[in-house]
Length: 141
Image 1 (cartoon, rainbow, N blue to C red):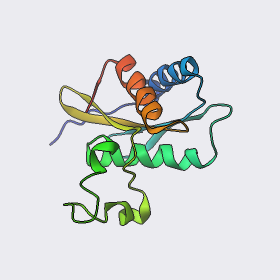
Image 2: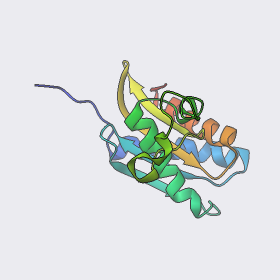
Image 3: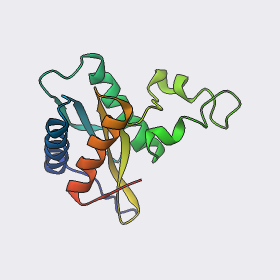
Image 4: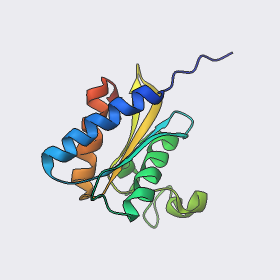
């Protein structure tokens, strides 16, 4: 029998609020998604002014980071032609995203969920995702 640790809805709201606060501080309205360890969406926010295509992008960044247990940007190089996971971005109906802004959320080295952020530059998306993870007191891979 396994014991599974996962984020809950209250955790998701705390993470989203921290990420939102950072997005406001840098002046970029974002779409922010949070999933539990099984890649189920448990929280989402599209800030006023967040880009419409970023809704899906934030959710898919979160799915990618949680499911692979890696930051999305860490998959960019390996998914290039000739790389060990070439073609990854076409898997799962094209849901895998290799642009920065998705982070798994770890507690004691175990993935308990993930966050995905989109609407800014990749660097801004990553910065906002990190703010959500750090404010929750968890580790981001």
